[in-house]
Image (cartoon, rainbow, N blue to C red; front, top):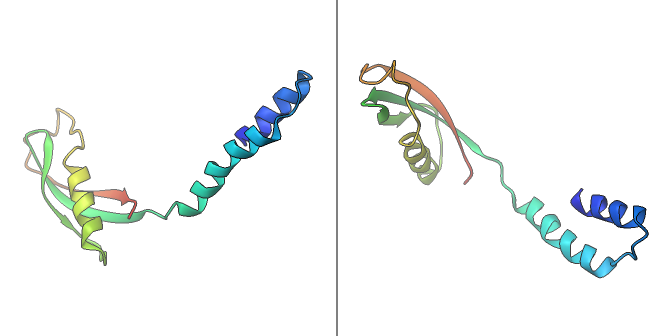
Length: 99
């Protein structure tokens, strides 16, 4: 998309088309697209304590334990609103993790 916009911009201003540079710009984007993998959803059951999530456990079945570990690590960085801090309540949160 960016390459097409650059090409259209250069053509509209009468600039000579530099296809070699445009091809170089297009290659990394084309190679990156197939490498993208689908994120895995992990549903965690966590306890709210002192503005953070603790005691997180995966509720759904996820085959890869490293994905679950990454979801738990990410949940540790979730900001908890002041109204819920120190409530001791348990919540469920969905984390999308790219394997």
